[in-house]
Length: 188
Image 1 (tube, rainbow, N blue to C red):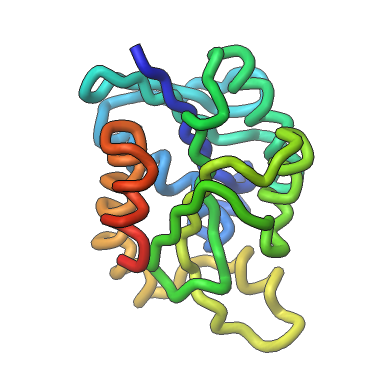
Image 2 (image 1 turned 180 degrees about the vertical axis):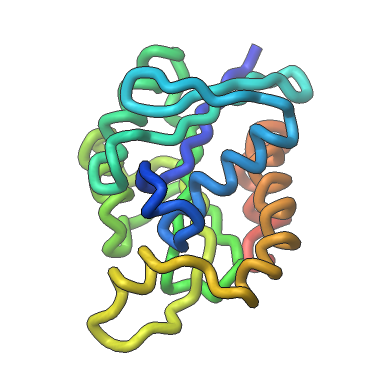
């Protein structure tokens, strides 16, 4: 039985619900809903799992806040005995157009604090990451305000189409492999 850890990055609390920075939470929530999986609060995060095509998907929403996400990822990888190549970290990216997907097997944190901490805790830049574009439509010096801001009406309506594509990409990661997933979903 192959097991995969799918980590949606975000911040806990109602102040952060439906913000651009919490797209990782939104994607794993959508995936859990699609598979009737219910999250439970456990050590360092909310966790659930489901089976699909002979694979077990362990979904994690760290409760450590974005900047300390790596601690939760490392803990659950160890607890669930999931190898690094079976981990996928989902996050927002202001350098990608809204709704676009970019999946990679390695790379820099690109200024993203959640990815910086993940890299530090895992001791490598070589881990799978799924960046969901939130666009960069903000004034200079206003990035924090922008990513912690709520989706606007136009973005909300487009998310209805984009979230199912994102969940298909996550399922593909575990069933079709990272290379096929990158070929089929990057830039879409």
